Length: 333
Image (cartoon, rainbow, N blue to C red; front, side):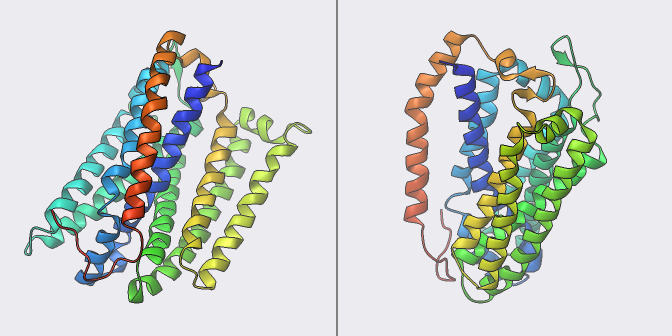
């Protein structure tokens, strides 16, 4: 069995699950400036309060799994991305503190509102910058990072950061469409519509720019006839975008969020196709980065036990807190 490939698939599932789940609560926070009413903000926060900390379980799985299973990739990526990683963690800390403190104060509520907004924006922006840094390439020499402190900071990585911000706002808006009613829901529809168009435009731009800038990616996507099968991804991107916009126009409640997840899944699949089989693009493959096989087997036994438990309690939490969140529901310790 190819244990390195199995672990790459497991970590990929964990990362996508994090994006799908934590993405909407980061997005809800970044939508606060569009909702000035204090009661509306209370309801918005209450839609994510029961689940936000459980969503971050998957971030721990992704980062911890990378360290344990692919230590070489971890040792290269961390020095290359120290600053955005630290910024992301600080943003998540501010957001987490805001959840607890906002409901305990009256005079300082505005401070914690902005902590919630800014912390979520910084976390989302940092994740996009890290994604962009991986796509543009990381310098490696003698199995170690060979670049500078600010190689991660380019116009392309900043663009990817804003693309992730827009995508998370789309998830947040469609989550509010599904979980709220009245004025919050109605004002979320046009926000989601504009964010969907913005995300589609960002994905198209990156999809055109990367093959032009990188020969490896160009060969992967345009080396006919082998690449013909990959063109189902851009076709699905168009179909999913049209489906999402139609669902928003028809004021549907549950399906827009699912359509949005579909957009993220297609973008994630495109990213995977573009870099496979590398963990550090064009430098270190999955198999070169993997820990010894005995370690992979030992860790896989634990994953086989723990992952179903994590999926079970995550699903149970969402089931318990299903349905609409109204003004009379609250977040209490």
